[in-house]
Amino acid sequence: MSPLFLLAAAALASSEVAIPGPRGPLAATLTEPSKNAPVVLLIPGSGPTDRNGDNPAGVSGGVYRQLSQLLATRGIATLRIDKRGMFGSKSAIADANAVRIADYVADVRGWTTFLQARGKRCLWLAGHSEGGIVALAAAQQPTGICGLILLAAPGRPLAAVLRAQLKPQLPPAMFASADAAIASLERRQRVDPASVPAPLAQLFNPAVQPYLIDLMAYDPAALASKIRPPMLIIQGETDIQVGVADARLLAAARPGAKLALIPGINHLWRRAPLDPAANAATYRNASIPVDPAVAAAIAAFVKAKR
Image (tube, rainbow, N blue to C red; front, side):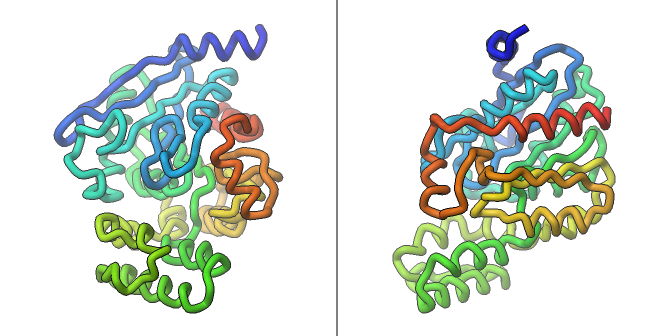
């Protein structure tokens, strides 16, 4: 059977599903190559990222949808979710900025219950980027969770990641302003928007500051150290948002975790150089496919641990 035929079959096996949310339904797409296939729940990354992996801020090409199709060809089912308050899950909460990590964790548990009702003993949590923190937090109570897959997930608290990302990009004076704002959020204190330079206004938008404060309280490596289910950490070696050092921190925190470093792929699992401008340009280039090595690593891990 050819891979193209398998992809077509996987598309036919996809269905729109929903569970109750706080005020309205939470929506997702379930792709099942077979009824007894193991299921991977794909938890989206930061901001307005939809179930396909697209983001109006400049990410296109449906990397989560592509990964789902690649996994289907390897006999792995996927559940791709829209985050509470966004896209198909928009009516679940009045203000998407009012959500907290604990809310996303509750939603993961809701999807776990949904799949168990469909006859699945357990499911695999796959968190991408910030979604990796949600997966780690959810797996602190591992009932119904077969294992954990961290995809380009940070190994440090958000404050450290932000500083590492901003310092090489900003002039010293502007970075000092950003550093002071980050320190305020670390202390659980809101930042006066007038105190940060205009180019940083969106990052420190008052509407998202409560969420940032909440997120900064989570230490991914500390969470990883408490995980009991099997863990796979996948990291691209040309990722300019989350680095190999983060993946190694997570692996060191959880003895027995499997670490898969994939050369030449970036934060979106696309082939990309290390040059920041060229790397970032791939985010908007929908013609660049997800590297199949990512799906191969996930499928091998899931099948070995079943």
